[in-house]
Length: 334
View 1 (cartoon, rainbow, N blue to C red):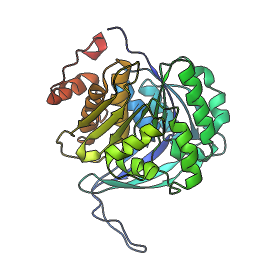
View 2 (view 1 turned 120 degrees about the horizontal axis):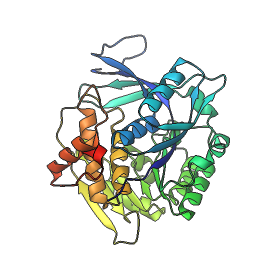
View 3 (view 1 turned 90 degrees about the vertical axis):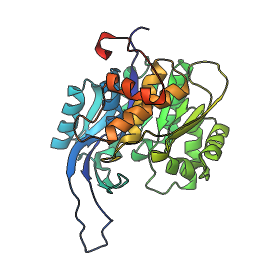
View 4 (view 1 turned 60 degrees about the horizontal axis):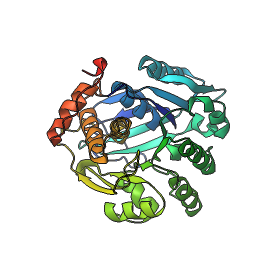
């Protein structure tokens, strides 16, 4: 098999302040103590881009950062990882967004965010960099719900045009801090009709469909027009239902358990899963194998503090725990 093709990505960039070992959320006027922290370049788009680059995938990113030191730090980190940042704009007069992630001892997390510069991300920014998006085999949108200045109709049109060109479309919305109002849900369902692979977590799938059960949620998403729904279930693994991307094939239904690991924190775990899954898509692997790669990458990521984004050889080795053997094909992947 030849070199794996690249991904064009649209999405959010911000800084994450991650405070680990937080036993409970504070009440107003009081304080709780964590046991370790990290301040890292982040956002769903950044985490997914870092994960893809660690697996050897070329990434072109269209995004925006604030006109401040944190924006420069994010750009430097992405560039050092090999991400093509020609489409990442410094948005004048804005501050880079920040998220404070509070992580329980078991790895579960909650977030408080100031979107800041993300409010200035609109469809005009995307139009200025359309040439970076038009010829990629996969167009991925990460963190759609964190871009309040972007019309959902613009996202729908982007996906529609990409599919007409023969590209596969990947969506990870993230949580809607506005509470998933009915009007936005209606618009989001129109976006979903143009999505090849949708990768929500269980809470997001429940909010969109009204179903807590992953099977029922995935069936509802299929009825909305999603090609393949892959619902991330945390410690329970993941569940997929729908049409395999990349060509005509029988519909699939896959339940995949998670690998047992000691969790440091799960901030960004779902985005790393997306990176592993998309890597499998680009290799034209069946959905179950893509899910295994996503699960293997995420399990390595959540279990360590340094060099968190796993390289391809270790992801392939970890995939062996599922009984999957995928040979490396490029010299840099061995």
